Image (cartoon, rainbow over all chains, first blue to last red; front, side, top):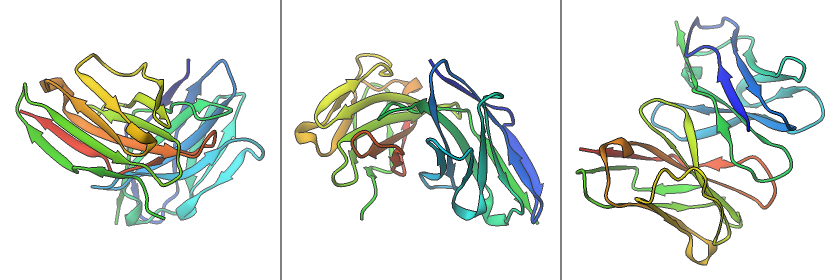
Length: 114
Length: 113
């Protein structure tokens, strides 16, 4: 079975500062990894995904994440955040190779302050 | 291309009543998933359809929940009778056959009074 731990429930940051949202996973098999974002009063939107290949993955809105197999991590980063990045971010994992269910972390609320 | 649509967006019912949630997946997506988030906890998997067949229903909490996907298009999730602990946000997602990622709808916020 897989599990996901998002180490920070809330992350406050000032506008234009860099941010890192941490995600660690546990799995005995190969996995795919995802970051989803939920803006206020909206659904889940895919930010980026790691399926295979390069361990540095670039997503929408200037976000990127790095898959580290030895540390079983998939941390999300952005070099300079905007007020509009205020949202809840979810890390998710699934077994690789098809259409399996997603296992989500508890979410991290990113609050960007002016 | 239309995304995954869910309705109602919000439903408020009393304990003991019945509620039916509906999900329309992206056209051509054979895989349809239901998830829910209760009381700010993790988003948890409920079940997975491939076309009209239930592929995995390991996350269904109990027999008060009934999911259907007649004809392999839209899906419904019925809760009967609703209990207080069923309150939360119910998400639907869809994906193409054998391909990630899953695309999510905006969710249905269910409040049981």
